[in-house]
Length: 612
Image 1 (spheres, rainbow, N blue to C red):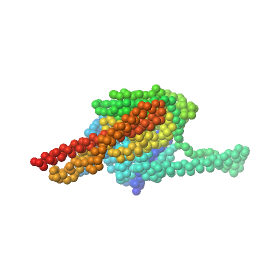
Image 2: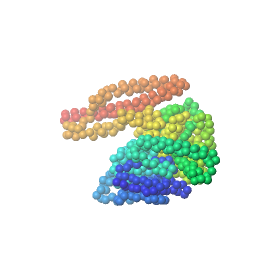
Image 3: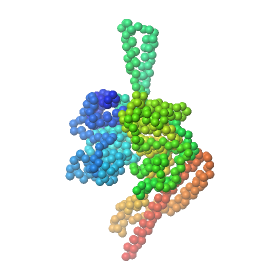
Image 4: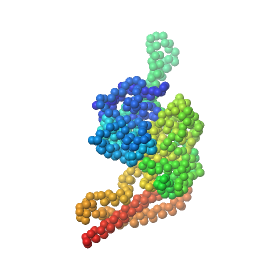
């Protein structure tokens, strides 16, 4: 059943035309992802479909009784409302279903990382407020759910939950997202807004890449044929043919028409020749770094060595301290304890989660020239600010516009260019994928492949992490940071094979398992080792001792390695693997010993009860 139809709609602002004569429909089984370069009008397109804005031409028709729920990129909030009041704002809840609806809302809020339902919205961060707005959109029944960047400001685990939720949800879905794994796993259709036209591809993101490649190859073939015809007509005209006869006039008109038919084959490609300042052998070393906020541990006893070619991803729940770690590495924030030692040649480029203060009256090109007028490329040549802007999808006419006319995504792209124009040799990226379009992300990833320096990136974009990094720093509880060697998928595989649960949680699970216990009259089961746990308990001290011995020997090798930095990197990576393994073993040792103590206490209690 058709839920919504767009009939030849057009929309523009001033002299800028966003899209023209678009015909488009949504069926009840559609799960659609909308993609396109920042500034092409994707958010405006959603607003028109949601009825928030009216098209300049054409109309949008919604089926009878079709309910549409829309999550804008910048939702409006009542700063005085509580979290639950904001979620149910504008929605009547009857007494009959009130408890069930409230329970569902609390479940969704919890999954989105919001636990205090009575918190005042005005006191929350921008990311928390966006997640409340997402909960509001999900809780309201709708035949068509329209979401603008739903994966921004939520961590990896929450994105995975949202994937499952939307896959289970009945009804149509239309969303803008730059999360390519999300597109691959959720949608069954992709539409691309490109230079005012809408292209539709059936399938997920992988299918889209194949189908778009085929379309562009066909367009290229058609263009080659057009150029061949144009050359023939040009040769005929150059021979001095006079436009007197009807036939001659027709050929001149044909030449003019062929000239006018030139298609825009290239939507713009961000091609960057990686260049950076010279970086010495010593980069950044952190030893026993600590940082507290309001008495809570943010970073606890963290040590690492950042080498020249490192590609490190930083993950963890929102608010645990990932951005704090980057700020300490950059020297913007001092640790409470420990040492951060930066090499003399280190030049840091910091692309932060929040855009720096921008003078909106300043022209685009002047904003970049403030940083540098030329960037040295990898081949030794100089690239001008204007050339770099073109490679960043800012054509010549747009470079002279004030920043005020740019979209949010275009401003993020501009900030990224300014960071790279400083020719850094250590890049710190704080949520670089937020608000950047897929094309920009793809070329940024290619740029990082050849970047002659170290990269540390905080990101919740699983595709980006798999594509770029070879080490993962994971923020655990109480400020502990664990190192995993490999990309994000490697980390997930390791985490699943060796789940790390707290001792208290494991003991609680054990105590809540309902098995027969004669002493408790059929209540909870007696605490006891499984056969596997008993064997592990008997051997774990020797295993820990072996790992500690190997670590000690490895540290001796590191101290003697001298200037062989290739070998040093291998040894340091092995050291980090062993330290992570030792940490897991010690947690397991604590759990097994506490469980053994509980078992002993239980046996004593039973003996006393039976003796009585």
